[in-house]
Length: 401
Figure (cartoon, helix red, strand yellow):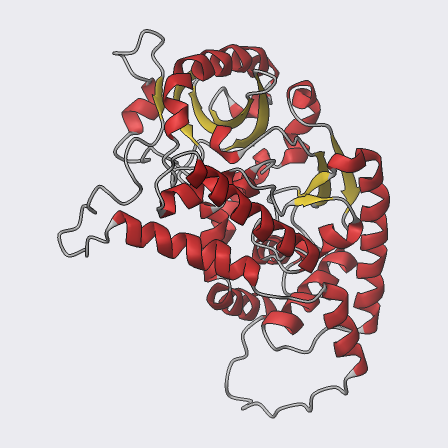
């Protein structure tokens, strides 16, 4: 399934659409990403998270080279920094440096107290709103910060495996990947990010990208934001790659201080793309044809009730109270994640290279050994469940996709 999703997204990699649409989105620079760098990241992840001592001194040299290149490329972005990603996806499930973790928790706690003082209820939805107002851990100002995310991301691991394949003796056959650095926009918050569906040249539907939090302040602004998105989309649409045939999903950000919209990301008009507040099956007619009752034919959805307030469709499902559900999401995927301590990637590297190699274990010759890719994906699936939830919960990670 992961491989199928990747193949469906290839035409929507940022290096495929950036050039014709660069006037509508964030300034971006691309760095070559070599197979040896990809192998080094793979072996780092295997050694750190999967207990497979495959990391070696040559890999350390490759990662040091990549960190230096990232550092040099990030410097021109200035104090605002940049957003780092590969061609296909970002390392939104990666682990930031200790300094960023500490800063995130300080910002989060301050935001919670500020909202409570403004009269917000003392509940988990308020804490989701506080998260939306925190700086994202995906903003990087150095090669060290960028590499910390790349080497600890399961999303990066899977995409690199898909590109390189499990056999190191065979050159990669998939399309090459690159590292993209995008100018960070400090005025963009995740409560002002929106996903739009375009079917055969017609914008049909818009949704809040973050479909977990209830943002009450959006209600009075919906009409204005909708008008800006439609106007901006009309400028962007003629520049879309012709192979999309006028059908795609596009993410926009609204910058309230500048009262303007910016294009963030493009995705395929397929179920592999998150449906936000829509449902690919139930809302298929709306997504493909629009809303005939709306004057402009476009349906715009923002969350109007707490996440989880509507019972699941299956009668066997246990109805979890919204507060209990939201508390679990916030606690396990924000508070516990960023309160925990994790040393810099380079400290792990030094520890492995200084320690003696683990003794080889005997294997049953009749037992089939899984490929490196299968082993990595299976282990990452177990270890990365929390990170995958974060990828959906904390939409600041989407900021530049």
